[in-house]
Amino acid sequence: MDQIHLSVNDQPVTTSKGDTILAAASQAGITIPFLCWQPGQKTHGNCGLCVVQIEGTDRLSPACSTLASEGMVIRTETEDILEMRRNVIEIMFGDDVHDCGSCHRNGNCTLQNFLNRYHLSKPNLEEIFTALGL
Image (cartoon, rainbow, N blue to C red; front, top):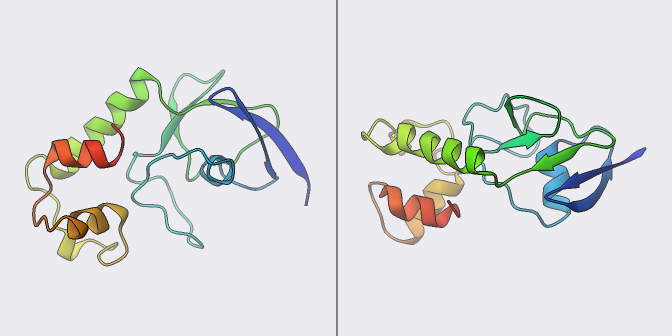
């Protein structure tokens, strides 16, 4: 398969044509947090947690559903990105709106695994932010 070259946080990354930004970053050891993405399933970037900034664009893009392309320059940790991620978590969990038991990811969720590991029944925003590196 054809290889493409891009930059993520000033780190050169080589990946296969057709890979998403999330996959390319992960292969290079760069962590981008996500909730809605699942290996082998089509995704639409629904949760908004994996957003990244692509140089030359004026909006944040979901890393899980945006294909990597030759020469891309990507940032994963800008102030805008961190603010967006915090907002996503606050919207999902800030007013007890989210019910893990009825979520389609129930039983296969990174955040739920964190909550279970620490015996938390209700998400505490600061603990979630810390776990996700926000």
